[in-house]
Length: 503
Ligand code: BES
Ligand code: MN
Ligand code: ZN
Image 1: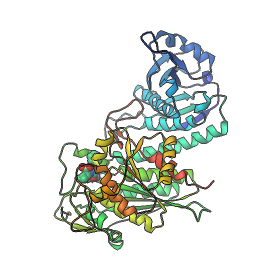
Image 2: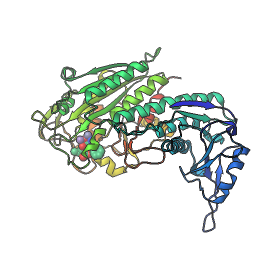
Image 3: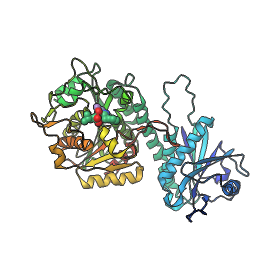
Image 4: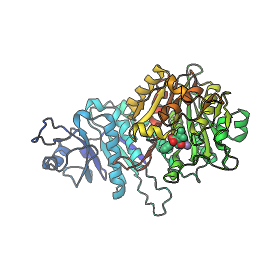
């Protein structure tokens, strides 16, 4: 998708479709209150072209509601699309991101390949909405039907952000450029997550990461079995030992010029390219979905891509522990005891709790390579989905300052994470009779005992754990995003990293 930024008057923009945003400015309540859809731009020609339909009551400016007008009077655009943002008091830059996605997804099935979106002129939304609109357009342009032979190429060829006259041009241009990098990086992650387990093995994931790294100028090494043995990654190896596919330890490094001190951020991702559960095998219902069990790893790869292109002045290390969790004559068994890289011994209660095993060694390795601050992302537990539904992802941290930076990042990314607690009582639940720790803590508080398991390996290095099991896959299509991989966490991890950058 090509992107352009235009400062032309909105009504003069020549395009197949001009999208204009509207909010509901109704104030009264009660039976007589009527929605009051209002365009958020200053352009008399467009206001009069839309006046009749706005007065008709057909369009209520609900969030992502759309209404199309052909041949709007006085406009250079062939079509005018009204896109709702919902109640005006609740409109944020995140509403604009979604509305841009909704405009794109309106065009795609209708064969419209080119569109422009007029940014609202309200000072509160500028200039951040330029970036958000481009991000939203990329998110909306993604569809998961890669392997359909009748896949019509519906992708948008050109997306123009039309900026109002009152905006700060430099800031708009900067945000616009960032939006494209971030949107493409999120979609890069989604493409990886969408791939089935037979197409995307740990080895192939390593190849994809290496190819991306080469393109954007990141250092990248991909190791396998020998390196796991050399580093004594007994927990990571235990997961992969039941598969015919060798594991991949992906190490990406971003070392900006002139930054030789300060923090080193360690991004660690769970890269289970397929999770059968192993000997503690999963039921067959919905097992196909477990191709997405590498979404945390893919998020780290996408975040590293964005970091390499946006060049914040902070060193960042990305580690993805990729393996396939399979049952086999060589697979690990419940009751086995594994020795992790850190030297801690782990009793395997359930081979389906494999994500925490690969991450245990990934976190230890990040620390060995010099990480001063850690963040991990994983589709780790069904318990997190039970707790938070498919609305919020879970977040955990052992350090307030580190988490405050993540909270600040969420303000920018618009992604929904909800912090859950850690605590010594939960550590008790994963004590083992035979070894230092066991890999499950029973049914209750499963997302937290999993987090405490990881905490044992992060130790007191400032650390954040993101459990994205409920959010990494969109179960029901929304107006602004297709059903399928969401690419969640890419934007938030990127923004978190930028919080540590030197001015
Ligand atoms: N990849 C799964 C987590 C998962 C489950 C994600 C359902 C999305 C939906 C993970 O490896 C897993 O199997 N976790 C187990 C842990 C349990 C055995 C302690 C789970 O959540 O059931
Ligand atoms: Mn599992
Ligand atoms: Zn898993």
